[in-house]
Length: 206
Image (cartoon, rainbow, N blue to C red):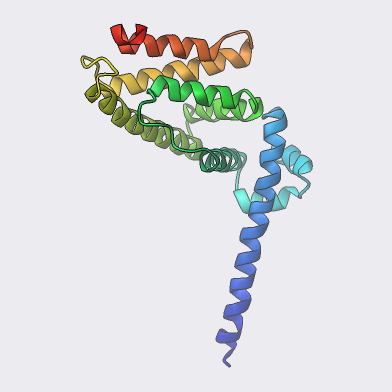
């Protein structure tokens, strides 16, 4: 066996261990952020809470911004995989209402999402900017398709532009979510339910 052939299995083993170690750190980071949000904003402080060295956190995630994006994406992936797809007749506003109800149990991740979106608006934050723009684009496209289906079935006003409805619902949900973080008495779900009735027009009162 040549030296190169002998090194190949060892290289694969190191790579697999690296992937497993990154996931282990990410799992712990998700627990930390879910419990207390982003109150400590330095990688060094987070590394201490997660139980790893600052060098290890930097090695696997590069920067605080990249860690925050990875934490939110992984938590969102797990949430999506654990729940069934919404029924065809559920409107975009009601979808966001269901999501808002679920988010109440993990306010730390709600806070993390708000921080990522705010960071995306600043210069020199490519990871947060890519995360936010891709997420909004995906949500708008998915919701617009759902709006068109609801318009065809007569469950949503036909005079509304699907793309604008989607943008409006996302803006309403995110804005209400921010208000809820600042004041828990804000009824996020009830406001979205009212928006749903407005979008349905006369059909919403049936």
